Length: 114
Image (cartoon, rainbow, N blue to C red; front, side):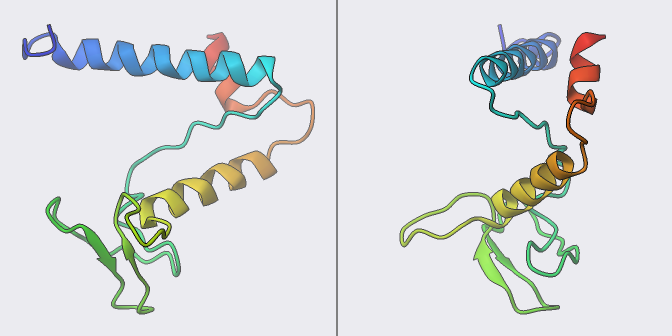
């Protein structure tokens, strides 16, 4: 069904939404915070200095001309090192988590309850 171009986006959106629901469900059960992070520009922005370094999809290595940082763009390969996008996602998630006062409804919980 995903090969049908008229339905593919809706099917994939529904699948990702269901996956996110399961993550949030088990996060609540095991009392582990689940933070949704906007993936936009996570592989484009430098995880070291924050400057945007435009790349094509075929560019697999992040090399920042501003600070000289170098890392894999999206995935970590041997030898183990953290990927630029993963570091950006982690920083954003931790920032969102730290700005939510204890007991307050998070933006994610507000989104889910709608």
